[in-house]
Figure 1 (cartoon, rainbow, N blue to C red):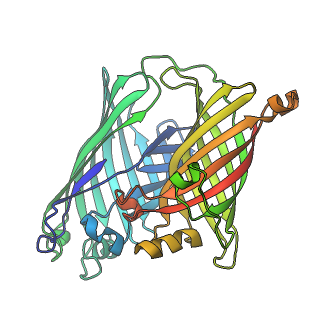
Figure 2 (figure 1 turned 90 degrees about the vertical axis):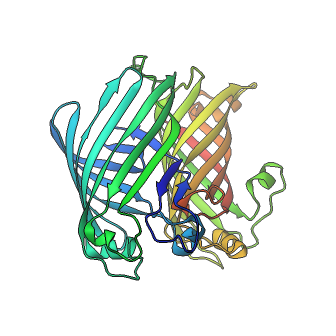
Figure 3 (figure 1 turned 45 degrees about the horizontal axis):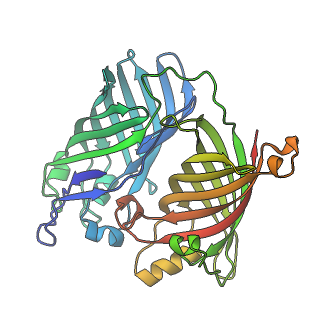
Length: 398
């Protein structure tokens, strides 16, 4: 859960002085790909002491929650990051970023990484330059032109190892606005504070890492049909067919992370996906991009079966008919970025046909679900609802 003070002069309209949002976070550190809560990226080049990364970071717009859907959800900044490691505890980085509409910012930071027993602290100090378009849009809300300026941001993230794979994660930061922003008519505070607190699942720091794990990478190919029914109706067997027969085809790769969690035999994967929404009488074709964490539980009865559940982020380049029609009924502006859930159930075809070459092939059902966490997430436009697709798939371990 993230909370932040509202820097805008909204006291005459609402009493809110802070705004909160529920933010699902993913953490992963691979050889090239990294996910770190509200940011992620791809390492482009690396030497012993320095590296260059492509970076994407969520950009929160901290306005009163009652205005969020009307004005729009949060956005993202993306660009390049140069990072220099002074030693194992200190680093400096420089970032050049833009939002989707070409509003530029850059950030120069010095940070640290300290471990003390079960605690880990990540202090950071930053100078943040914003161009005039950036300031005018995010702090003038396009009602006022604000010149460029440099903010100062100080704070620290932290984590605490509770037990086994369970960690508490959090952070607190203070940001001092540049003089042009401080003098803006719509800004009532010189400072803005923000903090977050939650929990996460990580490798047990008190145990050595396994040399190998039992789960293998996979490729999943699925085809699905839209339904106007909600998740509860679908699982009760009361799902309805979409009258326009909107369909999708998806491809997911599964990268194995671990084969246990809290000592339980759970196969955990990082699973990026690409989804093609087909053209129909009521929509043009569109593309969907997914990044999620998926867990499988396997059992024998009398052949091998699995239950699976995934959670992550989904972005579509064009709102589908099934989502737009629901948003129209409820009076919301839709959001291209939504929370992603996947519930699956499959069977091992090698066991079914007693044919060993098929041991790594699974046939199953999954529910492809996009939603916005019941108006509690500013990054999703504070809407309620989304879309559901019943899909069948074949999954290949390799």
